[in-house]
Image (cartoon, rainbow, N blue to C red):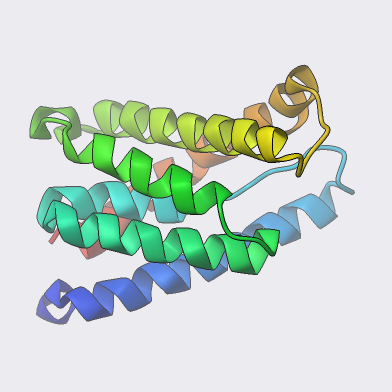
Length: 167
């Protein structure tokens, strides 16, 4: 898989994963009649694995680009994810490589990344006036189902993501 080591191929793959995440989220939410909101965020796992194999500047640039795309594609305004994703990428770049040695530590770091991504996005959206949803409602009907789904998705996709983005 030497062709995957090219940075531009990785950018395309993470963009494709970003779009697939949106379609998975839409499919799950329409299947559940929007009683709970589940967000597939496997592109965050890909970003985490890219931190281990690519330079921090490249990953932060990628997270800025993904943040802009996320804001345009899903939120129709710039600001929330464009601020949150590069900030989390910056702090993740400071993590030691020993946090990525086995499945459990990978899962914990990924869940922390997903948790902070969603919580910071919620608080910025609330601060900007983009949402009026209460925090308990958000945690119960959005954050908890999102974390459960992403645990399962990460468990199934970890080896493929690791092979693609950690090579």
